[in-house]
Length: 98
Image (tube, rainbow, N blue to C red):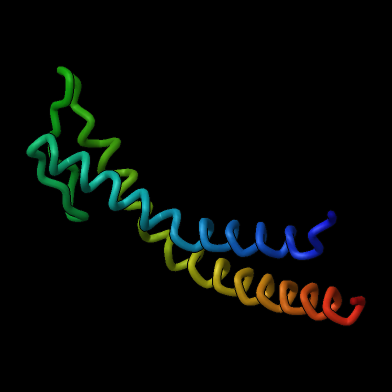
């Protein structure tokens, strides 16, 4: 059986991932810093020693990528609503064919 609304559902999932990906990265880095007893802020790079290596610069870079949310969230929202319209159209087409 061919499901006509499979692609719009995939579009919905992809749009959500695009919209919140920077937020997930910021939360992940914050959790890593917290679990290792490190300080993390947007003001400057703080030292964070994990397994004998200072990963403070990497944590800071990923933490600052949260600002990409101002780009990805609107793009994801437009794609989400476009996918919703596509899904509604697919369901309507499926219902009218029966």
